[in-house]
Length: 506
Image (cartoon, rainbow, N blue to C red; front, side):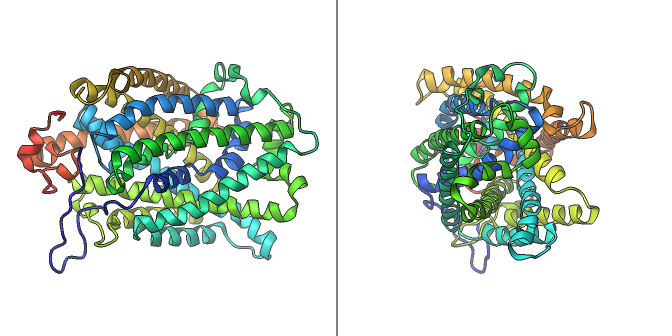
């Protein structure tokens, strides 16, 4: 298994080329993973929006179905993590399983998908916080000003020790999960509550709109796969990654299914779609306010905002580590492969992501674009589609890797579960792509319906072409793709070691 290079900075150097080791345990990784999933944002924001857009009420069973598929996928995924420790995650796995060109293509798709989630959160925070600040404090603050405040906070934390980020996320996450459970229980006791079977109807997983429903559900799990991003900074990565992945999937599934069932049952299965369209994210809070009072309602709104902040912090850390991995191997400029001595934070990758976030906020403010629909909703939905496509190709990469390297894993981990998971994910990806217009709430063939999936396709092809360029122009870099700290360009193994990798793909 690859380990992080432990090179000491040269005299006078301000940056190193290694992440900090032994910083994170299972709980810390779970906090990063679930913070990216943003439980309260999903329950109060994504679920009502999905109900209004699709008109389908089977969201609880969709969460459970997606969790089962992802759990099957995770069997081979975490097994591969026992052999590969690399902050590049999907990039490294696809490179080692399907070949370096496809790996670079996947890395570019990953950067786009996670950046879409990241910048979408800025728009969501600003748009949702604006009326709340007017109601609470009588302050009419522009959405972009509020977004810039959170942007600054995330930018500062991004260059701090990953353990510091983990502590911040732990505090925010525990608070939002507790509130989600309390509000869901309160909805069960609300007047008019009638236990409904509609949210658990498996019939909604087939037929018109089923693909949109499944993508909406998988959006709530985005982040579960990123336990491996922190493998180089984890204590005992072989155990930490697998435990954190399964714990996150289970907790997310139970929380989402329970909360969405309670919300739909409290509103009434025959009325919830209309109410979701009228009330939006307020639906979850309004249904519980009668039982909990106005103070709890205000607390719910506050934690809804902190849920978005937690997601921003988590995605920022994920993106900066992807860029670090690519820079370390020379696929991106090497400056991105540098970290801050002592903290191990991937500083330049973090600053690059902060710069992109600032550009998007300013652009939307100047152009007057809708931050809620055209940034938060479209960006989050597009990011969810991108991650689904990445998980699918990674599922096939797991099969390819173990086909050449069967040692150390039984047939369940290297063949049975990966094959089943890959087939199920392929079906889900097809349904998602065929229902993208419905999911975005636009007409089939419209610009958003074509641009969102098309952007992933174009970047994937561009990444593949870049890899072929590296193979001809910079073979030393090309041969080290996906090897992480053992890449020939990091001093962790050398060119000969890269060429002799038993699982290497040309």
